[in-house]
Amino acid sequence: MATSAPYHHGDLRTALLAAALAMLADGGAAALTLRGVARAAGVSAMAPYHHFADRAALVAAVATIGFERLYAEKLAALAAAPAGPRAALIAGTRAYVAFILANPELYRLMKGSELADRRAYPDLAAAAALPSRKLAALIAGLGPLRVDAAMAAEMLWAFAHGLGLLAIDGYLGNHADVLARAEAGAAALLDGWAVR
Amino acid sequence: MATSAPYHHGDLRTALLAAALAMLADGGAAALTLRGVARAAGVSAMAPYHHFADRAALVAAVATIGFERLYAEKLAALAAAPAGPRAALIAGTRAYVAFILANPELYRLMKGSELADRRAYPDLAAAAALPSRKLAALIAGLGPLRVDAAMAAEMLWAFAHGLGLLAIDGYLGNHADVLARAEAGAAALLDGWAVR
DNA sequence: ATGCAAATTATACACTGTAAATATACAGTG
DNA sequence: CACTGTATATTTACAGTGTATAATTTGCAT
Picture 1 (cartoon, chains in turn orange, blue, cyan, yellow):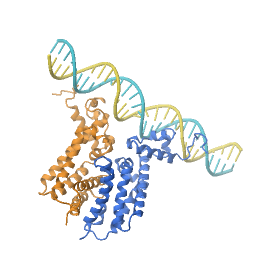
Picture 2 (tube, chains in turn blue, yellow, cyan, orange):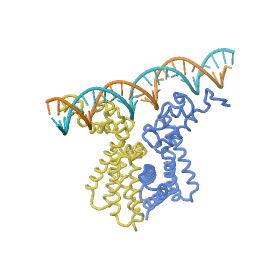
Picture 3 (spheres, rainbow over the protein chains, first blue to last red):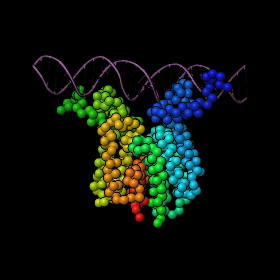
Picture 4 (cartoon, rainbow over the protein chains, first blue to last red):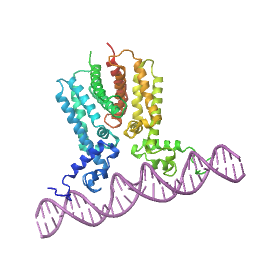
């Protein structure tokens, strides 16, 4: 019933993660402090340590949520796209870039160097692998290409990754245009790979 | 003559920047502390403040050096490449990615969110603009394309940026292969844009 | 009810960035 | 030469951070 500030929070871990996501969204990774998150949850500075080994573990948990959201949005975009691998790849690229534009600080955290040792967090590694595995499957569905499939996947991924990052870092123009560029760029790559 | 620990360092600013680059290279941005840099230069913790307004200013100065080095290496690669815009673009892409692989932490700093307000540092903005201006000029030399020149430039830049970042973050395989991918990817993009 | 394990807090320390006041050395004036 | 202003460097101080250690509170199984 949680009458008033019970000693045991109940679901502190979830509350901490929610606070962390909020603080990250405005303020960036620098604003994501363990003490701040604890404060936001109305709990002592040391409480988070019973749910996260250290700040890096909290960051990893936040990043894991980010990868799961990214994957979910990508799947939703694929479901809404016309049939066929070509349309799927274009829609997927657009969704990927759209996620970066909508969650700039989260995406930076997901790919940032604060997660130097991804291998130390199995959940994170698993969540991070989902989108790229999906991409590889779609590429395979395209049929024969002028480049090998692994390279095609890397090219498309690198393009989406780089385009989104450049956009949120202010190197590109209008954000609305960026999504159009994402689609056009993916289409151009597909055309470039096509056997003629 | 600098007999022994003179009160005035002589060229502290340069020494601080050198220390900063070294500490950044091993240890990443987190290891780049004002106090640490001062310590490395054998100077008090407050001394850097007479050369850099705050930590952000030091970071901006380091990033400026990074952009200048990147531009220099790119120019060197262009000079060594066969004539013609196609060869230049492929060589430039390779050099760009090679720079990222050789200076991962520096490149992360250059593009990272620690520099949220690039406009506050005119030198930095100027240095950062050089490579992309060069790229635009090379694209223009290609002649008519199936996509407009601005988009072509963004695609190539995004590809190189994304490929390098994915590589240093451990998402791609062998580093040696990455350079080959950079060249092949640039070539594929050029082919995809070509009017047929 | 009783005892144990989990959750939370209190206290403490080393480290960071940086503000304020102070000391030192140099460069130009008379 | 003395003198003074300015740039350079230091000392001291404070708030905020991550986190180690130990004490405390609570809920649950027995």
